[in-house]
Length: 402
Image 1 (tube, rainbow, N blue to C red):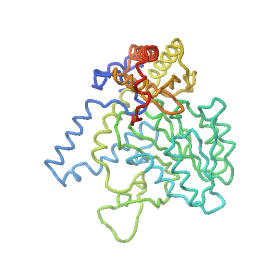
Image 2 (cartoon, rainbow, N blue to C red):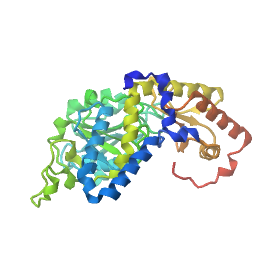
Image 3 (cartoon, rainbow, N blue to C red):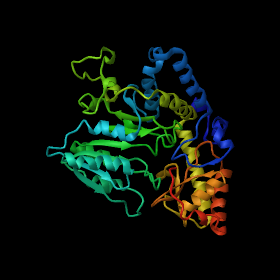
Image 4 (cartoon, rainbow, N blue to C red):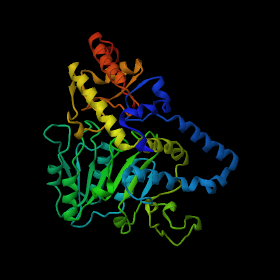
């Protein structure tokens, strides 16, 4: 249905997201707005549990993980049956890393110091198993990762290459082409984290030639917590045997075989145990909505809104820690303003919802259902708060999630 929409007609989706009627919700890079349909979907889950009990597994609960995984596959530009669903990206990364040993000559992991910290912790934990770590510093601008520079650190001792598609602080898009090219030349395995791009930047994982992709529906896909995913290139997957596994990865899980693991031949090869059914019921509505809107339409709308945001920020004299070029920028803009955390709390009191991250500042993230007026109002509110000192009572406040 995406062909029926243009970037400017996407505001027709706005009423599907009730929080937009109550708040100026500009934090979609942290938690996307909940679709109204999600409430009905979760009610269906509860009704099925209540009325069918254990029989609900056979009625559809068990296969729901595969259905949602195929929704994600469409978003990623890969084939059905190549994606598995996981509770969070840490689990998805642990799954793929468990397929590799680090006790040979090829034991290197190359990753960027601008990657999301949770990812870095997992790579760095492999040092205890023999991994040689290469942490690539930020580009000259201080907030992005240079693809060519990153590629220069990859050699014939590199086993894994781990890169974020969009930097979570700055929103800078990483040029992955030279990275993938070099990795494939030397036989290294590329893991691309798309958590901050999926749902706002069109993805073509199969075309790009990456070996694995992780990400989640929490943010731009409006799917809520518990809906993260792992894609593995089928040509690679058939040669991988995860050491981190569970009964759902077995070809015939309901045989409860004591004969050992017999891995599935599809994306379910990377499953673990009992799927997170309520999360899947919650997640599928947002993913379906983004697919309906069309990712290229969403991207065009995003670029229009973030360009408008940057121009307004410059007029207010705010510093920027995001690329000015829309083609090199993801879905949010990082504003360098004084006392950013305190300003963020003052904005929340006014029902203007953004977030603050150290070394980034205020991250303002409009989505396809947001308006130019909302962006304009948020920037003016920041200016007013700083001018009036309304944020000062929050300067010593404890930092909270969000």
